[in-house]
Amino acid sequence: MSKSESPHQGSGKKRHRRRRVNSTSPHHGSARGKSKAASKHSAQQSKSKVRRKPTGRTGSSKPVTGGTGSIKAGNTGSSQRVSAGNTGSFSGKGSKRIQSSSAHARPSKRGRRAPMHAAPVKKRFPVGGVLLIILLVAGVGVGAFFGIRYLLHPYEGARVEDGQEVTVVIPDGSSGSEIVQALLDAGVIHSSKDFRKAVQQQNADQSLRSGTYTFVTGSDCADIVRQLVAGPNSAEGQLQVPEGLTITQTASLVESSLGIPSKEFLAQAKASNYVKDYPFLASVGNDSLEGFLYPKTYDLSGRDKTADAVIRLMLDQYQSEVNGLDLAGAEKKLADRYNLNVTDYDILKLASIIEKEATNEDDRPKVSSVFYNRLSVGKALESDATMGYETGGAVTSDDLTKESPYNTYLHKGLPPTPICSPSLWNIQAAMEPADTDYMYFFIIESDNYSKHTYSKTYEEHDSAYAEALKEQAAANGEKK
Image (cartoon, rainbow, N blue to C red; front, top):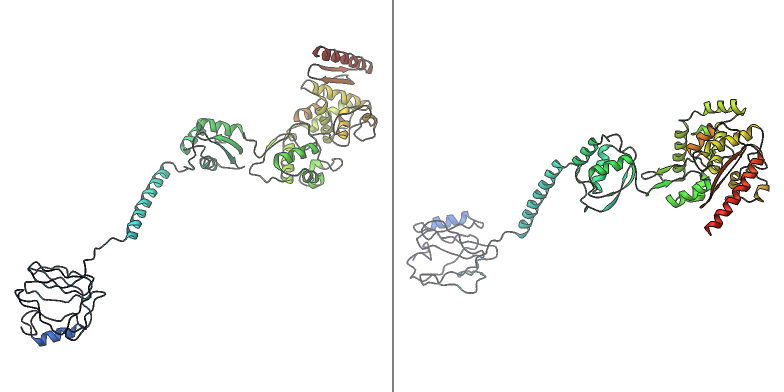
């Protein structure tokens, strides 16, 4: 066999013949019939590793197995190539060394030893690629789900189990869409479409009120709309100021309801702090806001909870209520009937006394007439309630002898300030007293006895009062 012939060419019975391998070229032989010069020229042209090319047993292409420098040739005279891998190498001057991961060579099917080569490498799909595809598919699925749901229900919010009690705050000035979104976010409603339909059915577009609400998730949309029309139903952030409270009592209530310190509230509640914004405070006595902190239930959810904010809210309410009253017309009538020069502030003072003395709607104008009758003839009002403002509680006979500008037994006329914040009904009673000649009255209210008596003279009054005490004592005796 010449040097140009392939060491593997033939019938398979000839032994392999050693030859020198050029380590710089992947080709160490050529096809049968080519000259040594052509082979040398071919080797010189290839200075680098060539790509592995398949050879076939019958002339068709077949991948070369192995990745460590093995050699595999066909049996039909096809061209032979050396496949150089990543870790295999060829070295030596007359011998051929092959690094292989295989410990033993397997014999060929024709009974000859097959060349040493590495075990086939199974190609695996990268794990990271699989995870990436899974995440992409999941992302597309989730996106499609929420995209379709958003198209069907554009205001869908939190999913909360039905039957849960939740608090929802609707800020002042909220639009219809903002109210819907607040209800969805809290899980109160599940469909904006159903809620808007309920609003339209009740014609409540302009009637939904701001404030703090307590709702039960999953409630019927019609019921929720009705509650929003009725107003806040949650005590959270609310300040309930009943009629007849003094500033000191209001300060304590503000502290317990909103957490604003009572001392801070009283320090801020000075007329001089607000007279620029509220001109009706210009003539107040003692720089006091007594009487002007209007009694009402205030919702401060979503508002600044400061003493100043609360006071302004109450002054705004007073102004709103009084602006609907014809105070000037009432004062003219009072001047004509009683020959008295009465001011807005005087009406508020008298209304605060009526608030403390009268107990029902029928009493209010009668009590008002008694006080105006006494003022018109220069008599002292002689109201225990005014001295009660001084004592802060019950009034004794001794208290009525003590010096105080609020002791209307010792001082004629009205006290220097109102003695509480009166209701609108009592302000109206002070504006429109009943037309009577009464100069005295007494009202007794207890668990088992009630007596309301009005008299023109002191003698009538004294006699009626003595009789009432006997009746009350008898009622108590019967109870025992």
